Length: 130
Image 1 (cartoon, rainbow, N blue to C red):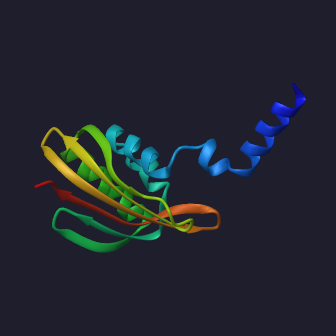
Image 2 (spheres, rainbow, N blue to C red):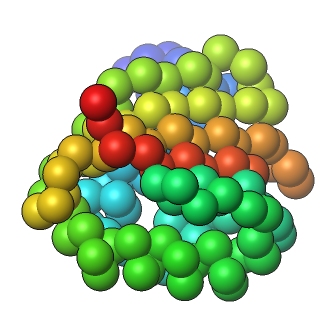
């Protein structure tokens, strides 16, 4: 009885990022579905390249959160799903979401880089889905 428990303990402590937490892209997809700009912004780097439809610039974390909040107020989300995910590099994540809103469908591209053992969004692109 002790050997199987010891094995499970060692397994879970050796691979915590894969076994105990979901991928950050999945978590972000849930926040997009909820229209939760605050939770998304909690994952922003100190400056973020933000492209929302036709507006593109580099913003501070607070500015980017406000722009995202405005986007959600104009486009209330209905559904969000991950359609592409790159998570093979331990210091980089990239994901594409399909975001359905009351005003149409959008393609959301998210680029994250690892810093201090956490991933932060360095680029966020929201474009109308064609």
